[in-house]
Length: 387
Image (cartoon, rainbow, N blue to C red; front, side):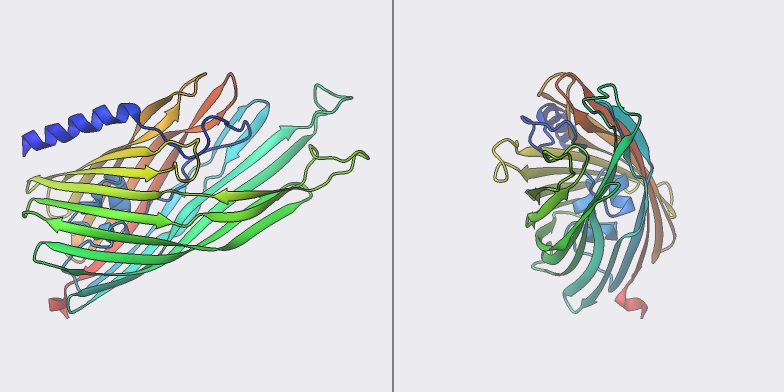
């Protein structure tokens, strides 16, 4: 067991040297673009383990990520929220603020077993990101600036409502599927103009779960999200006609995501120590030739000091820009959390992430900012034998 874990750790460190975030066109970066993943990492216990727990047999939150997760409980309820803190920074003459806000609930899931079938339905905030730009107005008469500022607020939110089912195929193998709607709302507003787009798309998820022994299990999950297309309309001082009047600027935009393939493993080193490892493959080249496919790695640890507490620690990789170059570096984001389980049926979870992420890039400057996130949740589960 120790030998296997050392091999996985070496692969984790070696592969992370060549990872790439791939979330937008790296060859033609926009100077006014603020990038951050924006994903709400549903499940406080799962997130505290670095997002590595798709094969985690002791945490019901795995059902949020792995539709084939095979638990023995008859009823299950999960709920949680997320708090993000505000961050300000500036570059290229702009002041930019990333909103901190409270999302509650950030996720909710209910599941019930009927014979061998486990039916589940839920809600989650899949993506949520709001930025505020503040630019000083510059004119021909006042190239140094007029003392007035032009502001623009952009927000993107994608909610996911889903239903799923799973069942055992053999004593050690189970399979499951989830299908859902992606309800999106994209807004932009200035001092005198508002633009709003809303609609829906869909996603599909399928998974396999295999329990080799009481101490080793593995999962394979495929997740497909249909891209979202919308019209973007912008009106501001920078877009004027020959008479100096402000005119709308329109363009077609897409909110695009690749498909994901997750391979996860869980190892029980002892009754008090658990290791989790996940490899995620993201297929971006189908979306754009300027994007690289990506591997993301995650590693998680769980320590069980007693029957009431679970201590978690995790790390995952996120590609990042280097200063003054289009090459990439990889930054490991660290997470930590604690679960308190006062009874076999109820558990409370709390996790914390302090991360750096890419905020903007110009020809001679690159900006990174930090964000702190706190995710909290509650789990309730009951066995059929308890009723």
